[in-house]
Figure 1: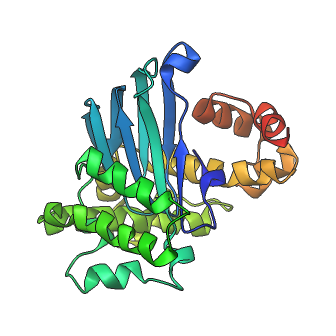
Figure 2: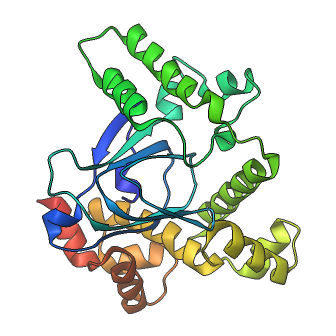
Figure 3: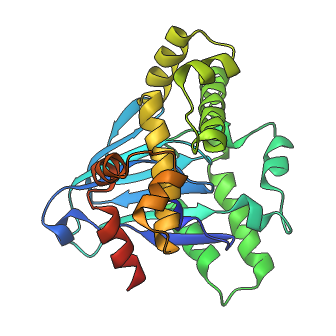
Amino acid sequence: MYKENVRKTMWMLDHTPMPAHYGGTVISPLHYGDTVEIVLTRGIEGEFMTNGKKYALQDKNVFFLPPRQLHSFTFLSGGANERDMIAAFHISIEALSPYLDLKKLLLADNRTLQSIPTVCGDFDTVYGTILAMLDESQPFSTRICHLLRLFECLRGQSDSNAAVANDRFQASRIVDWIESNYAGKPTVEAAAEHFGYSKHYFCKWIKENTGSTFHEILDAVRINHACLDLIDGVSISETAERCGYSDPSYFIKVFKKLLNVTPKVYAAERSE
């Protein structure tokens, strides 16, 4: 679930492989997207982590993730029943912008994407609304109305804690900064200075608010971009260099640690 999942369409529903199909635990490592993401699970046991917090999966779950919000999943069991599901609904703000400015729409209601809580919405209502948005037999204007209804479902659950929303926004700014510098040699010291923090406070803040270290986030960003290069046919050694890894062997080690597969196998599977 790295950058290969970022679409140019306004919205899209992706399904994730389930534990029963693989005969064991499925791990979705630390990652993020450029889209708004609504993750729905049903009948799955496991754990979700974001913003330094862990959530045990219930029978039905709806998780809301603004763009650039780091998160990971561990799916322990589930998928044997037809009703079980793991799905991620992506909404591209960029692709939607010619028709609807989602950010301005929320601001007019004194809300932001960051103010919508991570755990939110009624599963059946949210999932039903998403299916209505995906119904291409309906007029586009009707599908846009369903999009507005989707955010209306989350309206009464907006996070009243401004500090929480600010932490989510600040965490996304850190990902943005790393995105702009990942190909070089960005350091903790340089990042801390850019955001006006001491190194000690900066490291402590990142760990508490994302659950990850600076270098773990840096690796996640780099591997995001490495996936795209490999899919485009770039060699492993050149991909490593483009993404800031001077040693291809170390790049392969990090890649396999995060995705549980080597860059060579990853590229081969996606070229078939």
